[in-house]
Image (tube, rainbow, N blue to C red):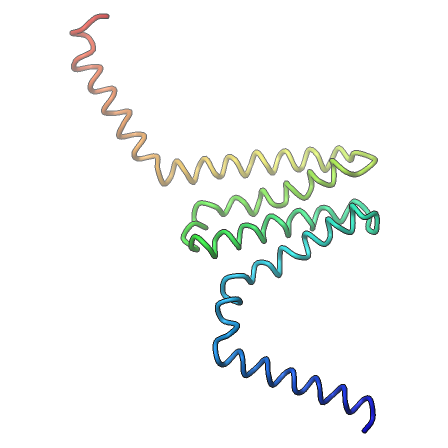
Amino acid sequence: MSRNQYSVGILILAAGVVILLGKLGVFSFIGNLFWPILILIPGVLLHVFFFGRLLPSVVLVPAGILSVYGLLFLFSNIVGWGSMRYLWPVFILGVAAGLYEYYLFDMSKPRGAQVAAMVLAVVALACFGVVLFWSWGIYFIALALIALGAWLAFGRRYRW
């Protein structure tokens, strides 16, 4: 028996075991809940490689993006994907985080990366504000109308 035949046999055996376990549902829970870790791990590894001085600082851009997106997807898997209607600006914030990390840790301190990160962060925060106002704004408007009506009806009568 050759070494090549042995290796192919082990690979076929492993593939059969993985398929069987998958059909039995062993991987469904792990796969459904923790697939975002497959996005988070490369982001963390890029950070480790940069801080281990193995890669240049430009890898911090995708490292930051992947890390933020992985955490967002993991959070959404745990609390439910309905939260994404409020959290979609995190996609913009992820790019801002990556660019800001690049600016922060690059020796040349690239001003363009800093400006782009700040602009994207402001856009993301503005989008969060619009999303919150769009979903909760009617309550604020109702409370403001109640307060204004109460002041007009009763506020002039009682002078403090």
